[in-house]
Length: 216
Image (tube, rainbow, N blue to C red; front, side, top):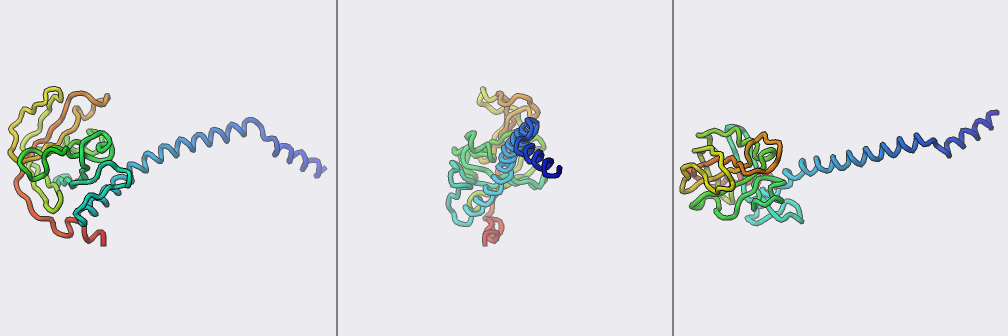
């Protein structure tokens, strides 16, 4: 009897019921979905680390260092907001591909040069903090071998279709731009939130500020 039961048990093991197949299929499907979601979160977690390391390397080597081999952009600056204890790395260019990973700098005006340097970022990720900035706040931008200091002079809501900003613009300064309103349910739209800041000074970056010690 024991041998018969063993044989029947073996047959059941060779021919598992349909429910077992369905359970396995559902489990594999769930794992696939979790893997895809995990990949997205992994990218969101890993990209800032790679960008930060590339920025430090670029400061040390005085050269363009891409955060990953196939990247079509590279970090060019580090924006710091002392009052919020916050920093954001800034990539070259303000295309959609660059803005997917960090804030992006338009190429027209280099930081510290006459004119306005423009940095853009998404309202729901890297530039969400713009809503917390106030007139009078100070900012700093590490670029190449210098740290440039700014003071916020205005906060403006503009229409991208007009191409105009109703504010007094400094001769040397910084524009931080994101979409508006911040809590919009539909992405896009012509609204823009613009932070205007005037340059108030600059200084040479020390070796520690440049991150040389971090790479040794």
